[in-house]
Length: 271
Image (cartoon, rainbow, N blue to C red):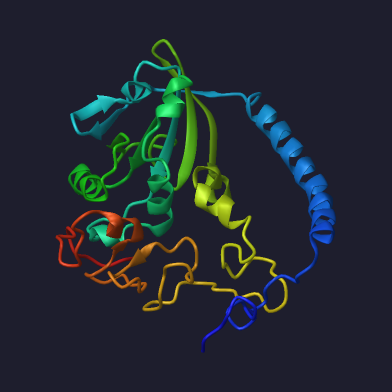
């Protein structure tokens, strides 16, 4: 069916009501009051974070990176503060079989130059064995520091899927903050932008107006670009959501020369 700009209803199910600019501005101004309150509460929470106590850790614990085992202290790169993202890992899975949410998060921090300029270092930690991790990092084209923390106790190792913050005082290392789940979202700017759009993230849990499309969970084999659950970033070359050997994290299709038959690493089962 062909639609024209003057009749977009069929193309935009559940679209917002159309009003004049003054009516829109009044509604926008009313929402702004709530947004400002939300911002101020966020500032208060950040202030409370800065007042949390901290826990001393052993900074000599070794993690494995491109130069082999190094003490955790090295991840500070001489700076006083360190933020890490702990990336989930599926042993033996092909590159396209690694965690969708962690892939999305890590992709949003391609480098940490602005953090570095503020005296904060950044690294990605994961529980995968280093040989698998190194291959994945090369495939994804990541430039941020990655380390394997396999066999290392929490909070440096242990469960993944967290953001953790650390403070260094000479050779002493302290854990200051940790969050997971929805707390990880500040890293992922795409989620914040989707929250500003009329169709939102397309997740089943969202509170949407009547008639607004809800994508919900991933639908294998359906187009993932634009109309799939927002955190699902794995597709074949045609944009169909799939975990199979022709798939890869969506951003990888933007690489020059990317093809479905490019080597995708070990093959295994996604658990």
